[in-house]
Amino acid sequence: MFEIKKVINEQMAKECDELLTKLVQHERKFDKNIKEDFIVSNNYVNKFNKDILFLAYSNNIPVGFIYGYIKFEQSNFAHKGVAQIDALYVLDNYRNNGIAKSLINKFYEWCKENNIKIIEISVFKDNIYAYNLYKNLGYEIEIYGMKKEL
Image 1 (cartoon, rainbow, N blue to C red):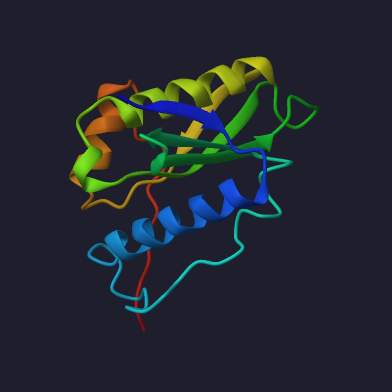
Image 2: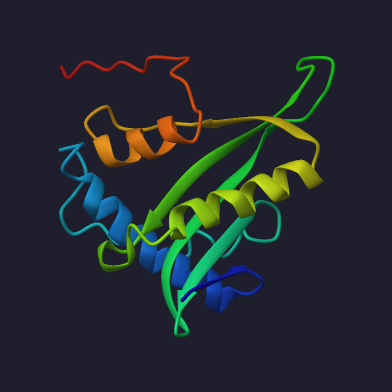
């Protein structure tokens, strides 16, 4: 069993940093430019008060998280509010237990509370697991990101 909690203090933010380090290390297989020894520190300490960050716990152990923010408020520029899911990660041993979907649902609740109508996310093209998760949740490809190595 697991529970989802909103990040409300620096200790929880640091637990998210540890999970983000694991996410970045996992993404090295999709982006060879990521350094092998890269470690995240103090990334979320200044963000949890202004953006949204949820942690998933299993027996009081952090096993997953989601981080996002409001990209565009409803304004003269945008007729709908837009949020960005910037990071979502669940430890390998805890996958396929509904944790990622529960984290995303918490994010949806936060979006509704903030009058957000559109959610965006970026996924590495070879990350089939993440791609399929989002596709099954109704996300569609809208923008192709491209790069060229010189």
